[in-house]
Amino acid sequence: MTRSSAFSYFPILVLLVFGTLFLQNCRPEENFITDQGAGLEFSLDTLRFDTVFTELGSATRFFKVYNRHDRPIKINRITLENHTGAEFFINVDGIPGNVQEGVEINARDSIYVFAEVTVDPDAPLSISPFVIEEQILFETNGESQIVHLEAWGQNANYFPSRFGGGGIWSPCTASEVTWDDPKPYVIYGILAIDNCLLKIPAGTRIYVHGGITRSTQLGIYNDGVIIVLEDGRLQINGTVDQPVIIQGDRLEEAFENRSGQWSGIIIDNKSFGNIFNYTTLKNSILGVAVDSNAVLTLNNCQIYNTGSVGLAGIHSTIFANNTLVHSNGASSLQVAFGGRYNFKYCTFASYGVDAPAVSLSNGVCYDPPFCDNVNAYGLNVDFQNSIVFGSRNDEISLTDFGINNAAFNYNFENCIVKVRDLLDPTRGGHPDFFQFCNPCVNASGQDAIFYAVEDDDYHLDTLSIAEEQAVPIPGLDVDLDGVMRDPSNPDIGCYEYIPR
Image (cartoon, rainbow, N blue to C red; front, side):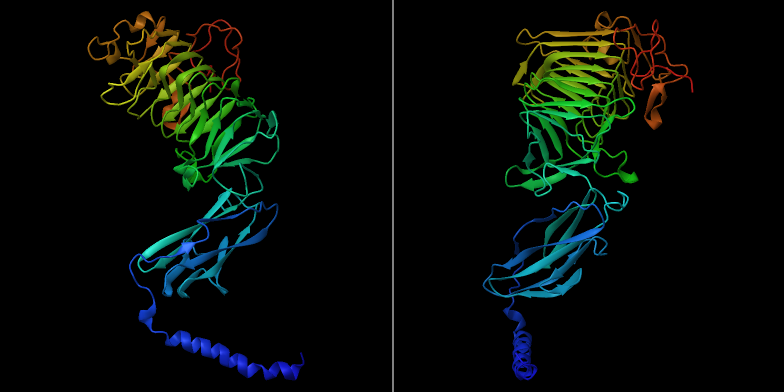
C-alpha cells in the first residue's frame, strides 16, 4: 500500500472510531443492567504463573471476564488488592493500570484481563516469598468478586506441580524416590505418597504452603498436607548437624511462631516403615497423626507450634526416642482407640493450654458428648526416662472405656509427671496410678525442671530435678542435641544437662 493510498483511508477510520465512541457515549445509562447481585463470570478463579525464575524476570498470563446477561454491564471498579504494582501489573482489554473504573462489557460479550508478574528469585523471602499471592477485585452492582493471582517467587522445587496448584499429587515416579536437590522443596496442595518410598536426605529444606482452598475434587478444605498412604513410606534422614525442617512457607519474622500455617503430616492406615530422624515439624495445624495399624518411629525429633495436637496415635504403633513436643494448641501427645506405643527420653511440655500434655485412651466416642456409640481396642503404652509436665494440675489424662475386654495397659518408669485430680477416686478414677508409674517423681509448679519455658527452651535448669534420675538405655547414648549422656546416671527427658 502506498503512503497516499493509506492516507485515503484515514478519514474513514476517523469516522468509524468517532462514530463508535459517539454511539457508546449516547447509549442511555439505564440500558446497563443494574440489578443488585447481577455479576460477572470468569474463565478461571485462580490465575497461576507456572514459571520458576532463576533470575530477575517477568511473565504474562490472561483470563476472560464474561457478561452472561442480555444487557450491557458496567464494572464500577477493577483493582489489585495491593495495587502498588510491586509484583503484579494488570491490563484490562488493552488499557493498562492497576485501578480502573467504569469498564463496560456488552451484552453476552467478554473482555480480556492480562496480568504480568515480575519476580526476583534472589530477593529475600520477606520481599519475594515462595508463593506470591494477589487478588484482582471486581466491584459490580454492589457485588464484589475476586480472581486470585499466584506466582512462584523463589528458585525452588515446587511440588506437587508448578502447573496447577492445589489438588492431590504423588511424588512416586519410581519405587524409591529421593529428594536430593539442594534447592528447597515447596509443597503446594496435598502430597500423597501412595506407592513408593520417599527419602528425604539430611539438610533438605521443605516448606508447605497451606490455607483454606477450594477445588472441584475436594470442595473446601485445608491445603498443605503430607499424607503417607498404605503402600507408601516416608523416611526422613536428618542429622544433628543437618536436621530436616518441615514448616510453612512464610518465613517473615511475624510468622516465625505462628501455628496453623499448614495442615500437617498423616501416616495413613497400614503404612509401615516410616522413620523420622532429626526432624523438626513446626507451625502446622496438626503435627503428625498416625492412623490405624500404621507404624512410625521418631528419633531425635521436635514437634512444636501446632494449632492442635502435636503427636496423635489412633489405633497405631509409635516409637519415639529423644523427642520433644511442646507449644501445642491441644495435647502434646494424644492416643486414642488403643494401639502400641513406646517413648524413651521424651519431653512432653504443655503450658497455657486447657488440655493435658499426654492423653491416653483405649476407645473412641463417635457421638460426643453423649458417647452412646463407642468402640475400644487394646492399649499398651510405655514411657521411660521421660518428662510429662506443664501448667495444669493434671498433665496426664487416662480414659479406659471398659468395653470389648479392651486392655488398658500403661507404664511409666523413671519419669517426671504432674498429676493431682487423676489420683482422686471420684474425679480422676486412678488412685492406683503410681503403681504403674514407678519410680516416678510427681512434680509441682515449684520444682525446677526446664531452663526457660517462657523462651520455649526445654533444656534442663541448673537445679532441675531431672538430673541424674534416669537409667541408661542401651543404644541411646546421646541426647537430642547430640550430647553424650552420662553412662551411669543420665538425665530424664530429651536433653542431658550441660552447664551454661
